[in-house]
Image (cartoon, rainbow, N blue to C red; front, side, top):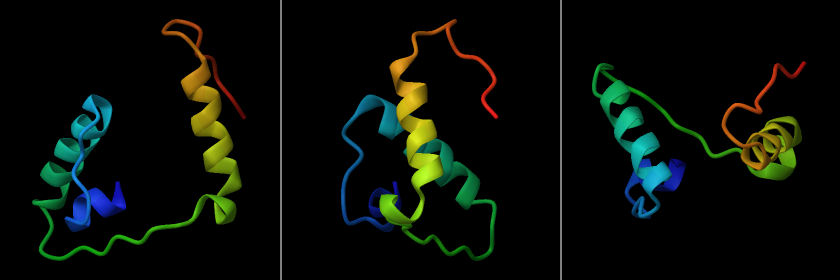
Length: 65
């Protein structure tokens, strides 16, 4: 999403487009903002959580600690 918001890449995937438009709307309410890409290898817990969320069908999600 960082690359899409910076204008380097386009958000072509439907889900990414939704995130892009939501983020763009939120960003427009700030006078200034900074966005930083954190490589997956430096953010393993979030990467694992996103993979877990993507493997579940709607209604199968549960709380994860």
